[in-house]
Image 1 (tube, one colour):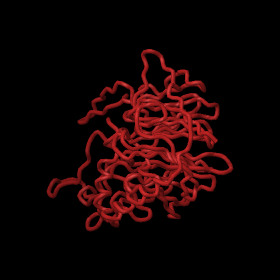
Image 2 (image 1 turned 30 degrees about the horizontal axis):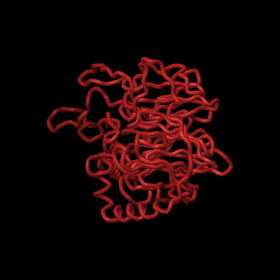
Image 3 (image 1 turned 60 degrees about the vertical axis):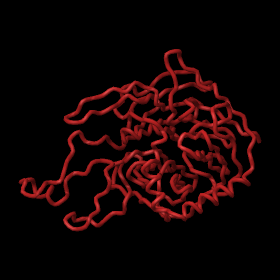
Image 4 (image 1 turned 45 degrees about the horizontal axis):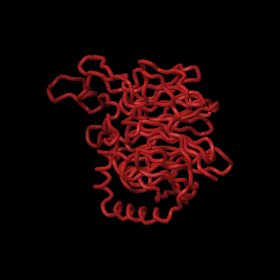
Length: 386
């Protein structure tokens, strides 16, 4: 599964919805970014040291724990199929690898986990649990420090497609009334006559963990879980408690406040504000913990990944790619929480200090971060010069 397809459907919808306003916003972003200062930095590209028979492929996600150990969720496996009742499921297309502080390979976690299909993200929480985000399986899997699976959010589609009953079929009345089960990740039904439910805006999804190509996960201080559910048919942020019970969600498809055109990444600051990378609309939207819109800012290109520092003065790092492969236009921005851009660094390419679709960022300190790249098949450790 190639990365350029990530925003194919949502980006097309965004262009129709946003029209001239999106073009104008893009031009403003480009004009503003021309004045952004360049930040000096160093980068190590030979960080990960793998055995001869193991190679790091497209890096869906990278993160480090409190001990400095590095975890990489990568599209490097050999997928195989499990035959269901009438549908074939692919699995094993991604692998979760652990490295020590120096980048030396330690072990593989989650071999043969059903949800490992197409890696798109990885995060390490404050308790050092590792969370993988898989857009192919529509699942988010939590591993404890021993490598055991302790929580799964989302699910693959059912093997048997449930369809509404046709007139005269003799099917139960519930199905005929339009209340048959809905497939996870499927577009929300329009409501109205016969459904018994009010109409839902496109992209608002279904309450719960019926994800459609989720892309990121984050937590607040209470341990509540936030999921970026928005590079498929959904354009929403879903919130769960620490045990995985659904609390609320917000968002729909569009370009207004609380609307998205590709929910690609999340970050949460020390005050509990939720920063959402709205990729198709080339902006970051900010919400409170209940999903109430607070503000938005641009001037960071097309945001693909974010991380937030943990010091007394927090900053956002935002990766940008201006083309499908990240090989013509790319950079990483350092941003204050009020949206003011401090500076940017890097460019598109395959050489050290260049980026090829920087799909994952992890920043524990203010001036050091890990960058996982899709098209360059690597992780760079970046250190900004003070």
